[in-house]
Image (cartoon, rainbow, N blue to C red; front, side, top):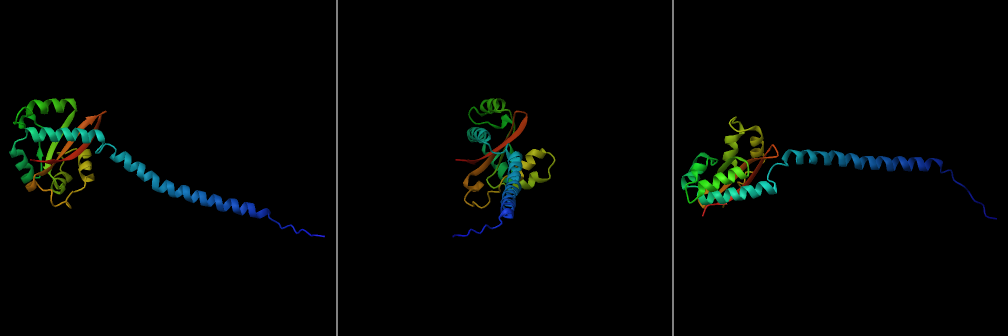
Length: 180
């Protein structure tokens, strides 16, 4: 005769459920603490350097290369930046007409030409109340690009920064300019 001994397993299921529940809650808390800051970061920077703003910055670069005189590049180099939003600055070829059409069509409020490294411009903008708060936040968000020592104004490298309005929101973009 075989005797069967039955063990008391009534509490085992409860302990197992508690352990799995704590494990699942731990995973959810890790996801919550790491995922929601990313959403906040996205919400904060969603208007910076989008495909649309990079496309607009590309055309701003083309107009700057086609119409800006050398004095604008010299001003950007010596002062740290040049406000190139005024279409009367574009004296080469049909730069004034191209600039005016471009500014109107894309609802551009500001265009800046700066040296490739943004560190000097960041210092200008940091506490300057002539710039909007959202623009100062965008500039603080940008990297300095200072590690690339080959790209300097002496080698012809600058940056164009575009501020435009889309859906009642200020949006920003930047792109490098190689003055040839």
